[in-house]
Image (cartoon, helix red, strand yellow):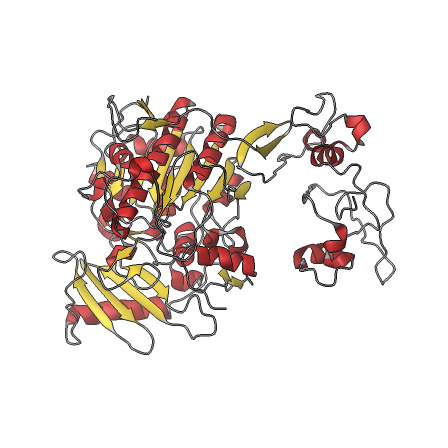
Length: 611
């Protein structure tokens, strides 16, 4: 019953200098962190010699510690009610019974803060399934699962019956058809939501809307036919952390410096979630890839940023990941958490980020098991499964009446190789199979016909484009630019920006020693420009390859020659890219030490990491 966090009326421990921290005025923010089932004598600052609690110890050393903090009762529910009401169990009346609730007449800490003028009083808890619910004066999470079958959205403007998964209900969207000029007006709306779906490890050429012959993506194909499709998008790396750092900040890898496994975005970096939060949006990030954990700086600006804990699987799941381990849970957990958020907060203005992982892990359900038994087949089946989860999310937006005021974007951090160049997986090279990714924008209305943009762009252009469309401030120091003029030009709408100015060299970067900090840097850099792609090793072997994307999009015929003027020109572009490295925030990346638990989680994704 001795806890490290809760105590009333206890004398604070005096530090060796004899003083206690001075209080300079009343704080305008209060954070209450509770850690379930934590014994005080298992914390380093409370005398546990073998404890590994550096963060808690640092907080304790800088603040006030209590000599004895005694929980009023050794049961979770009534014990948690006490610090939120400042009442003992007889006072708040909550027993250890899930049917018990706090009396509405008892004010909670969140309500006291809200009534005192705090603009963002909230309570956040992590529980088993990651479901969202409202609490008095707060946003919180609660247990539970979706009990009814998810609706499955497959068409735009017409009813269809798709016999792939009979447990799903077909729904029709209510969005109206608008001309392309309406894209310009989205910046003036004060009710626009933004949903960003990052589908990890998704190759563009495995989707029907990008020409794939297999029916892997019926939902995305239907949605994109009334939206905006960028046909050639180059990811800035084939490794998640480097790619996501460039995507979120709109910067080249050489500038943001996120190239090795210990690197983290510094607090000085500005991410889109921060801009949305400053504009009054509810900001929620749901992820399952350890490379985008908050300790790497990716949680900046999110009111809630969490990995939904694995829940009971409602579908019969197959796992075919080529890696040694298996990532716990599925994207069903992610979808359930997102649906709960939309049900409870969908009427507020929100920015929702979802990072899907089942394609990375080759996870699919029985209904998606239709293509075969090879790894490539399993990959396609995982796309089919993920595509239907996206349909469930879109259907929930429709059901809640917010689809017609929600901008949805679908992107990926990298692709996946299946021996096209003798490799499987990703994070090993920069060939097109691991860097050609989709980017699809779905406005809150239908475009008929949809818009297809042929000019190549980069993942670093994604957020400058989305922020421009949504009427938000630009990302400071971004190398990427808004492609809204390119969208309008593709639709035949005149723009003030010459689209020729948007045709720029596109770079990708992979440090092949990213998972081995004891090795020297092993940079591999590519540049895509004027229909050609050059890939150059910038370390010992110095190999160079050149491909013509017009006649050889899968990069099977190396055209490189030292005398080729085009190769010389592209190599000079890479040299300029390297020599011009400048941090947009005036500070190098921070470095974080990963404990064995986090390292094992990342190894479960199939990565080889050698500290």
